[in-house]
Length: 124
Image 1 (tube, one colour):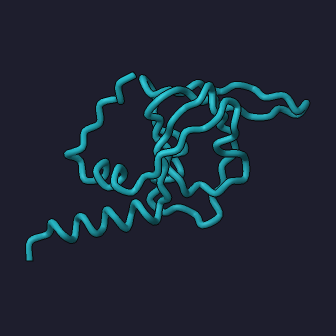
Image 2 (spheres, one colour; image 1 turned 180 degrees about the horizontal axis):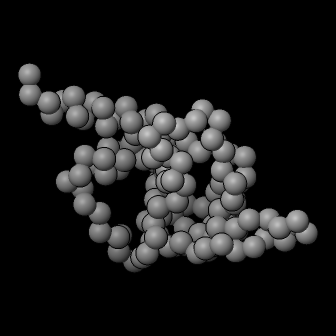
Image 3 (cartoon, helix red, strand yellow; image 1 turned 45 degrees about the vertical axis):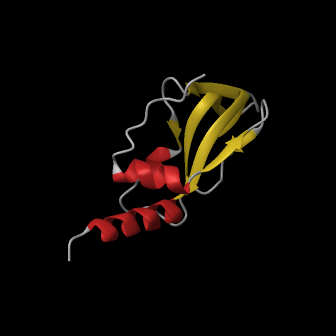
């Protein structure tokens, strides 16, 4: 399977790729769970994940399936907030479906890399 096309000329994408860690999850392994801090951005490069919420009966309600060919980012909405709350937490569970490979990076690592890359390219 080939990797999705990524515009690496974008400084944000370049910073993400340089600072992201590659990880392959086992089938049904929990990638994120409710209560986890919203401080990590995930990008699916191979395979799929399932996004779900637990109902009051304790059953998982499937909200979405994400894969490398379509919606490749997850946990991005709180990650990119202009004024993120220190206490922002996730409310859904994301499970590996099959054995997906994802890139992930922490907000502070990506923002520091972006700041450094922009500072390096700013004329003095």
